Length: 68
Figure 1 (cartoon, rainbow, N blue to C red):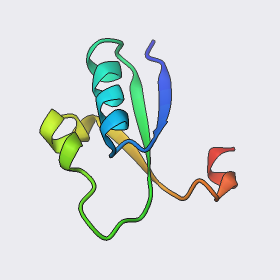
Figure 2: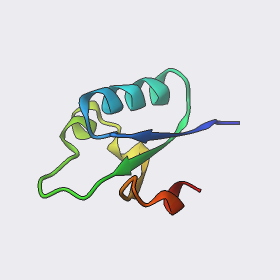
Figure 3: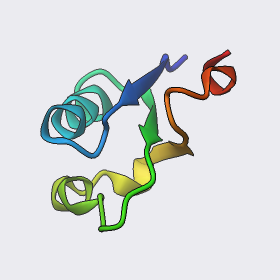
Figure 4: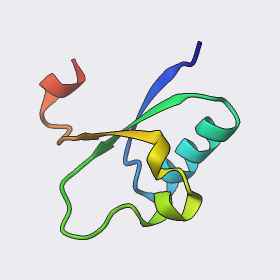
């Protein structure tokens, strides 16, 4: 059975490479928290070829009900 993980900042350098590692080496289900942005935040995820394997959650971390 796969484990689930939530990564905040998944579109940043550290978050994208962590997601890549957990997908390819550890076989996790990845949930990435996105904040609203005016530009395309998926450059790194597209470069790594993992965007289609991530479940995205559009939210602000200040909306604490989303993580409950």
